[in-house]
Image (cartoon, rainbow, N blue to C red; front, side, top):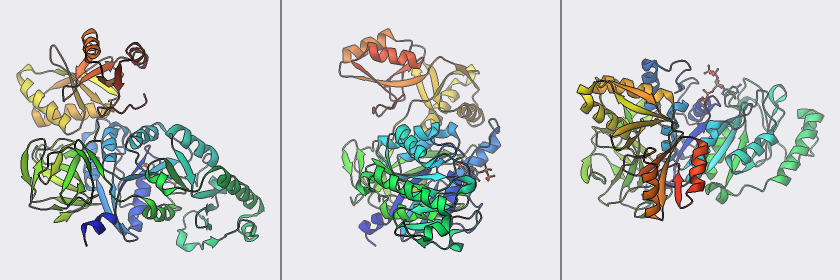
Length: 531
Ligand code: G4P
């Protein structure tokens, strides 16, 4: 098969959700359909159980699970699916954001009883930065969830995306009877505990068909007729081009746990989700069809066990063909590297990769050469863009508790932040180190790893910071003046860019208004995210 066909058959995507909405359950059903696993329960949730905040065995166990399920490759309907897993715990959300830079589309799971939750909004902001196409699965229809119309309104309003339902629920919770497929005009009837195979689908082209009344009962049938009329009146037919640009999201209803409505999502997914597409670099766009190999590292996994200091760098291939035991160019280090044991991941097994194509993700054993965002090429000197750092949510000053081991502490925190465990900012004079994380758990992990891997002893001291804002301006003098006046609140990121530590949302707003010539960005790629 040629490169063109290899690209055309691949779909690289992630399933994302607020914790507990059903991401793991849906993933498992996808894998069952793809034949990658044989029994339900084979995919362990990568969630760190509640209350396990200082249990490092638990964290490591979960991290172990999440590395082996980092990329799940399976075939469905002649399509090669690369499903990238994302951490379930909100404290590791930054990992999820970075994984989203390596996919071509996402499936977003919403809990119908809860609607759009905070983590959903944040994840969608990240998708919108790259106009990632989204298919929505509204889950848990077997529970007393919210009204379908109000859920759709909330999706449009809170996620700033147009929606187009492709199926419509009949009843909800105790009265849930199934869904009407608005595309194929099939009636899919639901019975808890039974798979769809055991229940016949009824094709009902015209909803006026009296069979609808005998199948559903006359009141639910009448309700379905009027709701479908409303849906078709309110929402335009699905425009696949708009979906691929991330402007409109098809929506499905179902119950992952009961395997209801899952196949419909998969069938639509393989029809409309985009294959690997072009990617932006600092030297222009790279097309997957380009014969020269290129890829970037979006995640690094290090072992917490000091006896096994191995790290795995996850590389997304963007163009050309990757071959085992071939020298490639590490752009940042200007170094030739060769990989004898690149691995593919599939549920619990890892296997050696001889070759890989655009859209594939491979694991490279790393002895410290890689940082998140690094580019690997056939020899060309360019860097992929779009692997941004986001403002952390929590900030602490790193305090050295053992002055005899400050070198170890410096090295440790530098390496851990290169892995993407947290972000490091420094403040001059005094070389004060500020660590930014998304969740409390990350500080525990850092302290533990600094102690066990580097023999350094640290404490974290609270500081008053609300958001990190990267500063830019067309007026260098104004920027320098701001940095001078706010010297106690301006720090440097890892690349020495100036960053304003906004003490509160109010102060950030005030500074924005007082300094219109300066832009305050919540990511280092300088596309403004909403606060
Ligand atoms: P997550 O990965 O998004 O965090 O969610 P996960 O799939 O682990 O699902 C969270 C909980 O919701 C699980 O229950 C799961 O069984 C349940 N669930 C998923 N889909 C449905 C559905 O369609 N209907 C209903 N009623 N429940 C659903 P749990 O009790 O927290 O975990 P477990 O003990 O079942 O693993």
